[in-house]
Image (cartoon, rainbow, N blue to C red; front, side, top):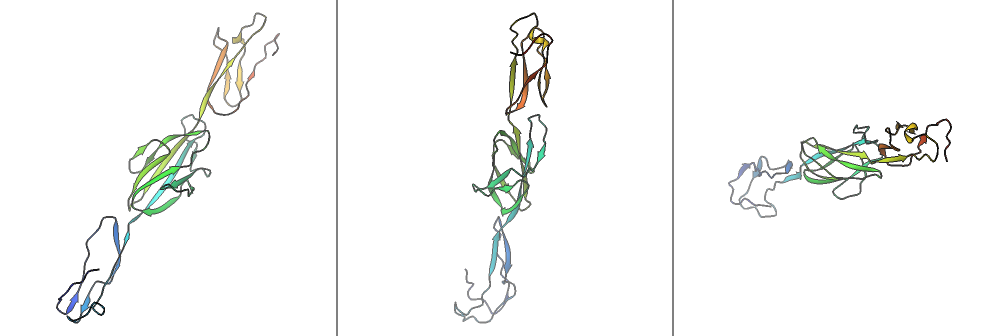
Length: 212
């Protein structure tokens, strides 16, 4: 506290300085009556200021490319979560948290078979990785993590043990991912951009041949 001494009796209004990041909640320091110059510290007129740290809204979103084709397939899926300032809150994607203004750290809970493709915020900032540092203002901020399904390639080799047929007379299929035929004179095909996982490859029939 502070004490203004030797004030002539009368009515006074006290103002306070501004402090960045804080706002005034309430005050009783307007039109305060000073009635005696002989008041002690216990019975002199008193007024108060109440202040609080500024707050802002922080919203975190999620975009997911589920097959690695470059297109976003899911927005704010329910099974992805995020944490704030090193905690383990597991907030749902799309949730908004009201926080004190200033610098905060946000991390996403990564899932198996996916990797981070970066993040961006509506204040123009962006970056890479599964964690971001954001400056929250009273206007609030929204940030989005992007994740992409891990993918790989599968090489299928064709062997012909006997006869005159060549490998490029067969074709090979993965359900949902198409059919490929070896180039002329080649004995293999490659299925690219397959989401990581387990697959079954089938081959076409060729009259006079059987699979060994």
